[in-house]
Image (cartoon, rainbow, N blue to C red; front, side):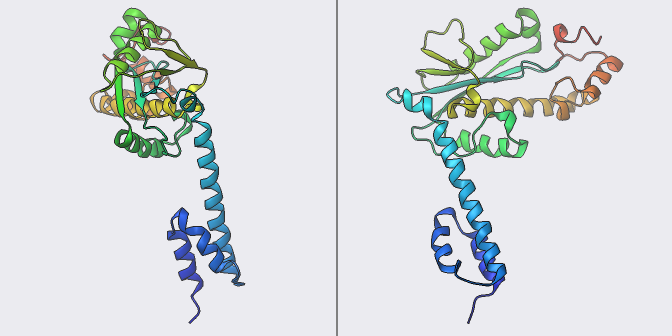
Length: 252
């Protein structure tokens, strides 16, 4: 009995990537338009997967270059620009030959994809460290120095000693470990990309919690950045305890 178009389509949709080539051989001679369309759709899925694998392999350029080191660590921060909330730094050591796909600069990923990748990274990383600098500390020593402090805290909270550090653009003062600053590193290194995702998800979750305490400012939506609704609320209600006083002088 001939398989129905619906059953073939369901089979192709449910198949894992490794199963698709055999299914193509089985069904690509089927002349029914519905089967041909289903096979073409599955071929596009396989092609997209192969492109993503190639992209992620290219992201391992620096990791391959320093492969002789045991614990290559990516460092990145999130939250230098907002008017409110902390700056958060992430430090991530991925396993050698890491095969996690879709890691990228966290700003290029949807919130849903960041959350998915965060869970995978936290589960499979050799070590993850986080560092924070409060709005008060940012006001006290300026955002750049506060960012460096958060990065040092993230490095220090790792369960193993990293070497070397792949940093997104900066060289962190008062750190004796070898550092390799990489311009736009969160889009060029899988380790830095992973660190940017961990830092971004961590900070976004914090800002959602702050939204429950200070609901006037819409922190769950704007994450402390200067969206117009946030600025309007700032002018109406004045600053709350997590606003950076040195960042809001133009508005209050």
